[in-house]
Image 1 (cartoon, rainbow, N blue to C red):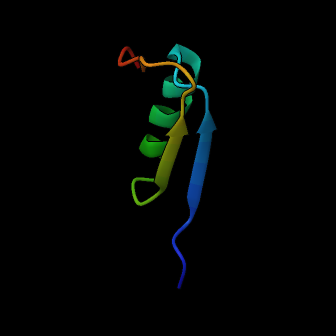
Image 2: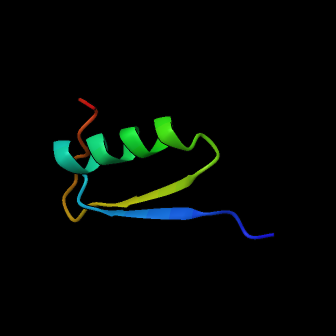
Length: 44
């Protein structure tokens, strides 16, 4: 059975907060984040 995935577009604070919230709600969720720039926010 395929695992459920979530794709986040944008590695800023909003994107990483959304990823963190999704992971809290579904711990087995695979999350992929795409960021155009060289930095990703770790403030979530």
